[in-house]
View 1 (cartoon, rainbow, N blue to C red):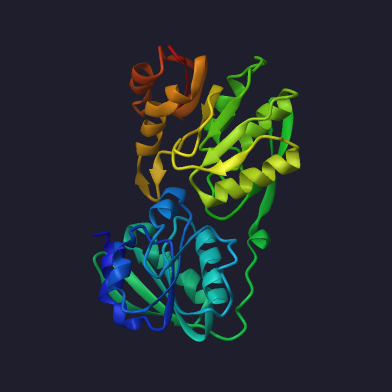
View 2 (view 1 turned 120 degrees about the vertical axis):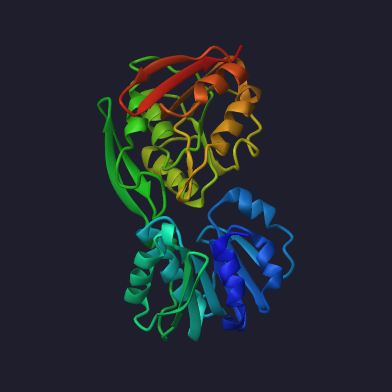
Length: 340
């Protein structure tokens, strides 16, 4: 069992009334919580899909669902996210969800930064105290004061500008999204690899993040409206906003890998992830490369950027076609293959 989930079960008697959970990984613990089920919130679309049919609980994808009603639960459990801004968002949502006099709990591992997370919690809830320490984890608890209801995800959205190849884009951001507030070096290298080449549509930007790649390609070439998918709630939300501001007509939707993609494309382009939280995890990209050929038209192109140490060229050769390196620097390589 995941350490944080095990520690929650150790402290299950601290929970009372209707309970909401923000960011759990495994729904198996829910049956062991002696509480009234409430919303269980995830940013991961695949996890959300797996949670359909949970007995009593209300699975939610992201932070803008009507079911996130103020003063609607008695206890809120927050699992430590990967960044401070994302924790601040989750704490604000918890304060909104919980009734005055309710309780908020924060659980995280040492390697996830729970010590720093506890300081952030104490800023929002000054009466927060540590109630348990086990399995390299800590559990913090705080009472909820009156007057904290009111949460709007739009208030957390930010905008920044990126400039590549003489083109400037306004890019949306939310806490927890990849490369928030800046242009990722790998994405810059990938976009530079197009080097004035014309792109034939249709195009799909896989693991699109805030939508930079698709919006840049569309702005660079009239009539090109790339589609985009991502597994993360923040990415889908931000990519839609980025596309809307840039006037891009492509579709943006949530998909765990390519599972929710039905069409075929002349170009699959991606700066795919290789982390899951704080852990290295290339499984999503490996699955994408295995499935890519099924979504490429005959002769269609796959183009990705990745850290050079990752073993993607062999997978590309095996599942798509001969792999060539279009560009590289000290950290990243841009790979291209055409469907054989």
